[in-house]
Image (cartoon, rainbow, N blue to C red; front, side):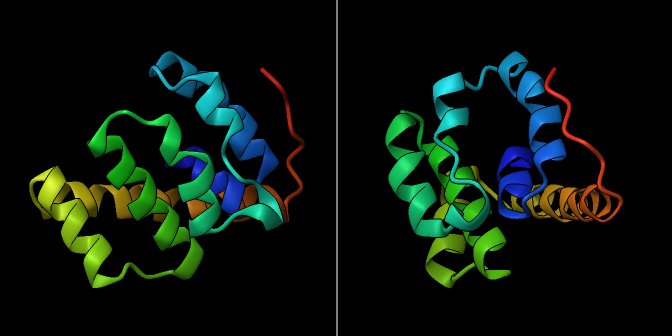
Length: 120
């Protein structure tokens, strides 16, 4: 979710800072490299580039929920209901939405103050 947020908001510092943590959490470099960045970011691009690399239905729902929220600032009823069904309840969706909101704030701050990208 953090990488998607950095990618959408053109926050290269945020994206690069979290690559290492994503790898530690078990996200593959192949999946990370499939994330559409900057002007290429869209729900459709995420679906075409990232989702085929995921075997897990839970991961797919989280990725698509996050992508649609980032792309449109909204989540349609079908996406919401599908995510809620596979994730079990609203508390996970609240957490996803909160994380995206927080890292959007971080991306804006990094961008405004031109925090340089540091590859770790």
